[in-house]
Length: 166
Image (cartoon, rainbow, N blue to C red):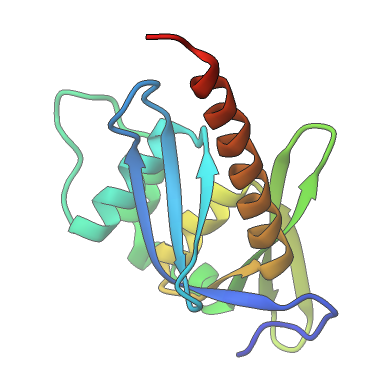
């Protein structure tokens, strides 16, 4: 099912990469590669989500030396919760709270003609979408805003670096 109509353009995520940024500070992130070739990054996601998403992609069992998370259990019991997956239609990341700088995702469920939308933590909604192979969309407006913020931050950082004497 296509994303719901709204005044906002939604971009479909073609791939999801969960990782800990290799350069300090080592921040857990989820990078969504979008249909228009751009990327949308969620920073400071729970490390457990990074592990769980990577485990889903690799189709591997959890490491025995660590405690399992609810995400490990959900992945292992996927066949028992297939009903949830049948009702989940899509995930849309389309909100940001400018006072906290936290994004919100909406998971859309079709309950036999009755539609339910749940506002969720984006990383958790992405996990559900990947678990059940459902589409993920991101608001173009949020992608544009993130790019503008990152561009202005790098320009400000670049100016400071030029003032530093060797």
